[in-house]
Length: 356
Image (cartoon, rainbow, N blue to C red; front, side, top):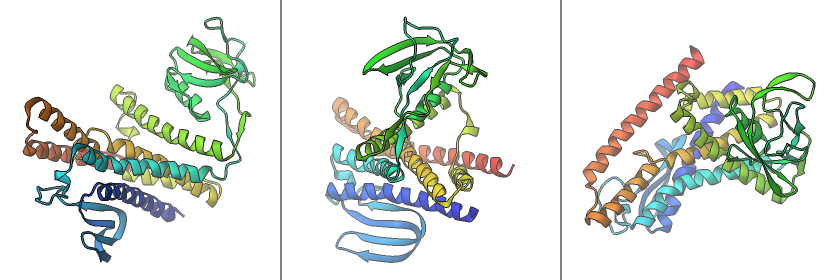
């Protein structure tokens, strides 16, 4: 079965890249930009259809695709070339790929949750006997967790996740009680008694495991949306941890690491149906991850292109001239080489962790 999960991982990569390029293609067409070729897959051509201005291609390797727009990489005299479009049209075209990845993540989660019977509510089940009041308040059974250290609680799993990020440090909690916010500041990390009488290190707050919201059309849509937004936050928190040193290279994964993770997710599942569901969930997280990472202001990525558009607009306002194209090309080239080098290091690290 391992080979099946490896092929599934490759297919997921291919579909997400193709969806990304489809976003650029649809936006380009809507904005009146000439698209010379739109391809599903890479490598040797196995089928194509040519229209008046666009060649639609199907290529052998199911590892992505591309959208070749007129004037994307060079100056063109065509009035419908990308380079001759206005600021907002370019922004829409560059951002459309990430939007489609985000949308794909949401739709995958929606499909996964479509058969759900109910969703756990992020509710409290009371506190340990040693828990002390804060601001004259305590946690009561049935309180709904609203935020942990300023981070909103969207899902049941957020409570333990957000608490774990600050373990050992005082924690600020906000809960909802009868629709009103109740704040508890500087909740202490200490030794508490658990629900089974055991002692543990933590915050002394019990999380309910039996509060369930019935699944219906509204709750499925709501939970799917919140889960997608939660994926965005996970990317942000991961980047913050890298910047602050809380995470390092060993915590990063490239294509090899992601394929390995998908294989582990599949093989650890008890049934084929569970494996499909778990892999789809991971695929949704990967889709949103790609959406966010592509919008970072890094040269050679879509976010980097939008960043240069903004810089050009500022330069035009202040100096009546754009940044010379040769400088932008130089920065993009250096950024691309650095990005490829970084991915190479991450890939080697993944291979070492896998076989070392």
